[in-house]
Image (cartoon, rainbow, N blue to C red; front, top):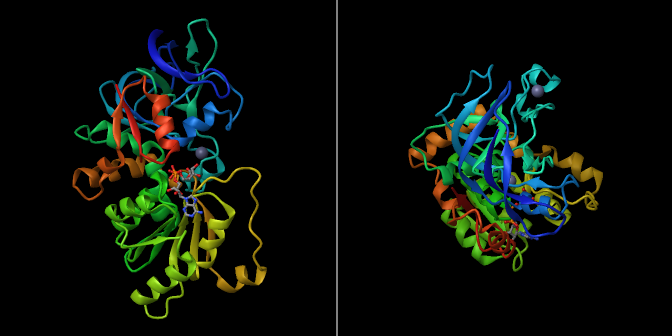
Length: 366
Ligand code: APR
Ligand code: ZN
Ligand code: ZN
């Protein structure tokens, strides 16, 4: 066991606190990771506000990169000294999804078995089973994905959550490729990552939709070929018009990624999609929201697929090293997602900037 500094949310709505926590030595299947960077994500704020569950105190932070410090007795995939990006999809290999060859849908992902605690022994709930606003954290070894050690931690750590969710929504869930059009509704961190993913896959046009012109400027810098301010223009008609310019007879985009998480924008995605196209819902709705009223004949008549994307349907062991390599080759600008590097004491201020939409990501650097 060792003691390290970490940021917790002690009670619903209360500001986060920098405290000392106890990190157990790794047991079987576990690893202790020395954290180098961790992005500030909406989900951390949701935990703090009690929006995920009531298992306070939470150890926040989950978009992290670091160096493996120690591993448990039976761990073979990673070793001390390895540079890793942490993931919240350590697949089990034996559930129904894993057995049928779709581990990205694993129903029984691993987290550390032992608990990190406060100094008085109170057990902590690590955000998404990670808890990386900390000098060190304890995770399941499978949550550590080895990547190119030359990469910048603050940039590649973001693949651990939001950036992977967006890139994966476009490529893994939506099937973005050359010869297909992609529209993305909502250009926050997740939406912009979907745009970068669509551009990386060679899709064209790549249409960014938002109600905030500043977001659209950034989306254009990240690979959008067209931008639509949906507070001024009907996004459905505009997406259809742009796609028809590129592909004769197109009646919308082949893939529409909804990265807001609201019924009205999902409905826009539904109607902005070409016949037999795919809608991908990656924005997270609140429990009170319902599917918008749509004639069933439209669901039938337009064909295609209405999908949801959890964590970009990623398989960390496959996707993280590949995306880090593309970053290192200059083909995926992960640095552009790092709006600022901050200290571990600056997380409340980062929540406010995030809330005001001023940053793609504030990243804690340790
Ligand atoms: N139409 C278009 N864009 C909208 C609309 C709307 N009606 N309402 C909001 N937006 C835009 C905002 O202007 C912002 O650019 O959606 C974007 C949302 O971005 P963020 O709040 O930064 O959220 P982000 O981190 O990108 O996550 C998006 O995915 O993971 C989930 O919980 C997350 O539901 C959220 C979604
Ligand atoms: Zn499984
Ligand atoms: Zn996240």
